[in-house]
Image 1 (cartoon, rainbow, N blue to C red):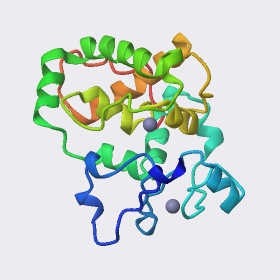
Image 2 (cartoon, protein in one colour):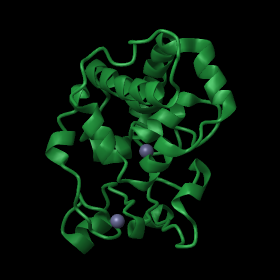
Image 3 (tube, rainbow, N blue to C red):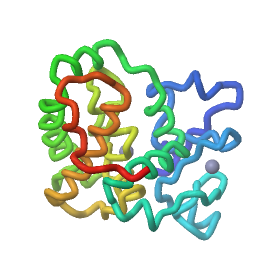
Length: 206
Ligand SMILES: [Zn+2]
Ligand SMILES: [Zn+2]
């Protein structure tokens, strides 16, 4: 079961060459300070804690602060997430032309509505509890990029980063929080979309 997540990227592949297609949620490149903080029993066995990188045991995330799920603290949340290999790649990978075109044709207002609906069907409902492939790793969907980057792609990532247990239907408030994270990612990666200010209607902390 656990095996399919163990994808240590070979040393001769540079981080810059990693794309959404050659990594998975459990990928690590610990020697370059890019880890995986997914909750794993093996981390507990090996390192006495699930809240560390399961490969190398590094403990560098301020979980108490992250788990407040305070959208005003999004900058800190995103900075912390970039220590994880899969998030790092989705924050830095070039976005496909078709995804950019899609984002521009819709604008933030429409994207926000679509993101809320997608989050609800992909990760919000009962049938989303079993971790699957509910969020594609590539393609023209800008919202999918955003979900992987912000750990709102599946219930395992949601549990690790946002401390929301897997066996629960998401509340409207939780969907709103996830939608705001997605929209902040889109605003940063695709500047100059129409409908400025619709990303997260809060003042972010520095
Ligand atoms: Zn590590
Ligand atoms: Zn995930």
